[in-house]
Image (cartoon, rainbow, N blue to C red; front, side):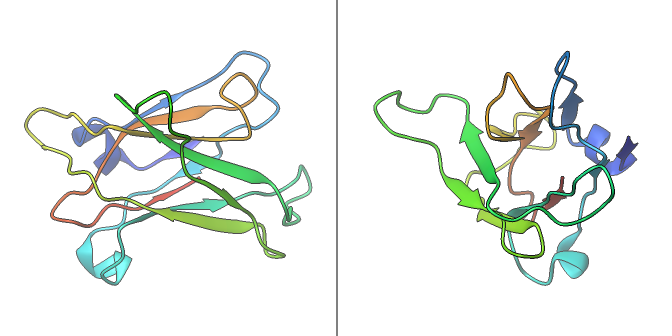
Length: 126
């Protein structure tokens, strides 16, 4: 797995799920310039031969979500890509990013936790 060390300093973690069918291969931070003003979690879903996988469910959830509401989901396009915007902040001193992301179901996917907007810019590639 390729995990950008800048994420570690922000409190972002990759949690591997035993026997996951969706493995995290890359998690990358984008600073304000790299993100081009966006504040999203970007997903790229590929099969074992690195071919894009369309129509795969990508989920972004957050700590403390009202159980009566559903977390935002996005589906990959023909290029295997999807994204979900972030709005909650991440305090870089508390390392308290509320967002976590996964593919389809937490029991089937590695999960990236601790994400949020840092100066309104935070992007993760999964």
